[in-house]
Image 1 (cartoon, rainbow, N blue to C red):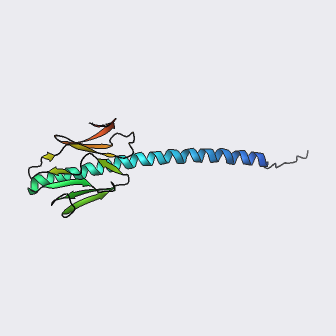
Image 2 (image 1 turned 135 degrees about the vertical axis):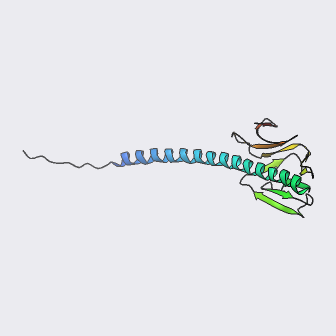
Image 3 (image 1 turned 120 degrees about the horizontal axis):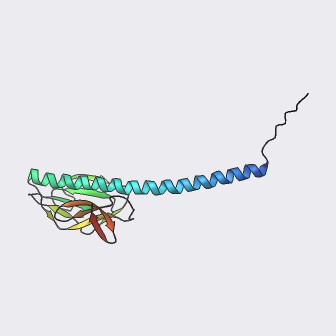
Length: 153
């Protein structure tokens, strides 16, 4: 008994449908990945700002020097300054992936480590992540924006 083996290829329609489905899945995954990346950048920037603020607070107390924390004009850099808030005595700075805003032009940690004035630093595009703002009050807190308020966590 002879058997014929028949090899049948894909038709053009089947190929087009497969490519269309793959294209849709890739587009969905790219959009989802971009959203994930944006959220992680906001949260990572918040952690980095909090770290710099705590460094300024600790240094002001140990060095018995005033330290200022302020955002650059474009909102992509946070500066720790020991002279004034004008940029003459920059001690440290961090560059951010996302643009941040602030309630005040600068925050002062005096020679005893006390903070003046109160306010917050928060991202321009508020993302729903665990931490997305820094609140300056009696202490410095990381928090989450809720409306126009930074609620400490």
